[in-house]
Amino acid sequence: MGQTITEKIFSDHVGREVKAGEIIECNIDMVIGNDITTPISIKAFEDSGVEKLANPDGFSIVMDHFIPAKDIASANQAKISREFAYKHNLKHYFDEKDMGIEHALLPEKGLVIPGDVIIGADSHTCTHGALGAFATGMGSTDLSYAMITGGNWFKVPEAIKVVFSGKPGKHIYGKDLILEVIRMIGVDGALYRTLEFTGDTIAHLNMADRFSLCNMAIEAGAKNGIVAVDDITREFLADKTLAREPKEFYSDENATYVQTLHIDVAALEPVIAYPHLPSNGKPVSQAVADNLDLDQVFIGSCTNGRIEDLRMAAKILDGKKVARKTRLIITPATQKISLQASKEGLVEIFINAGAVFSNPTCGACLGGYMGILGKGERCVATTNRNFIGRMGDRSSEIYLANSAVAAASAIAGKIVDPR
Image 1 (cartoon, one colour):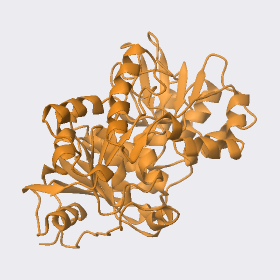
Image 2 (tube, rainbow, N blue to C red; image 1 turned 180 degrees about the vertical axis):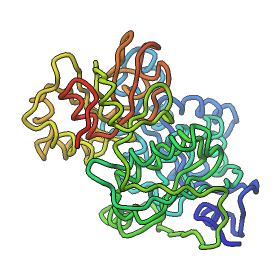
Image 3 (cartoon, rainbow, N blue to C red; image 1 turned 120 degrees about the horizontal axis):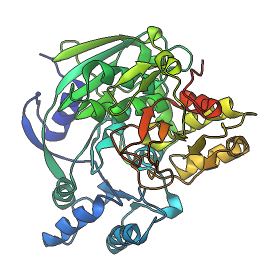
């Protein structure tokens, strides 16, 4: 039998053909830490007695969750990573001077490449599969093992093939596609499996949509999400100085899949994930009928904080005002995106509409800062999780949606259909 993309990437790294279910050990091209998870990895690394990183150019620390520091505890936590980065003279250390959310910043920097094996001590590391790489989240001590050895062990995952067909309608994006997948199979429907996204719809998805698609593979329990390289991928990489030579892999026609899903994208409405699970997806028409008033709208995160999201939001908000009883927070995913939004006049549109435009940060998404929800408050967010207490008080409600739904809903003060 043939191989999937994921099996081929692992085969290339171990120097022999591997199949799903095998336990392997292989080298890792990029290890990613952040200000929350890396201090634990650093302690384990230093407790081991090892003095040098196995592959310093394949290790990055991105300070993105609580930067600038929100309190004394987060400042002290960040200090651990900073001191380690300076001690080891890390080439790929990103702090306030060149900041961004890790899963947007590293692709922007050309540090994740097609054919790579990538791990990060953050569950949404699977985002990078949009570039035709194997990327997955691991624990902090798993990260330290890779820091010490340059590799790690994996069980090669079985694969689910997701076939998207048809051209997406107006205001249907990668976010809607992945919310529909999770609605169909549930939050554990792809447990320790690859979600391989295929079909003629893929050619209609820009890289921002593909990043959103792979970003939320973990919300179905998947080990990784992946999209094969094509001309859109190559165009995204063309203006970047790449850390390595890309390797393009494609699944064989006779590759083995444990399940195949077929989704008619042309028939989709924007999908809204109701509280308190990403799998609780409903069509936007139901949300409109439910007349859901909003206290807050958040546009940003590693799922939907890219320039395409900001452009869409600005197009809808231009000349309009955010509803009197609704707060709108917009967070760009990187400083480069922030600068681009400023150059294009998007920031002026946001501020004139009554929005807050912040620095790049994960803060609001995980209920850290820059957008905490109070008791009983309701929020539409372009983030990836709507668990109980995720963005603040345990009685608050989070509705996940795409950026167009979010922007239009901020104006209306309730969930509306942007179409």
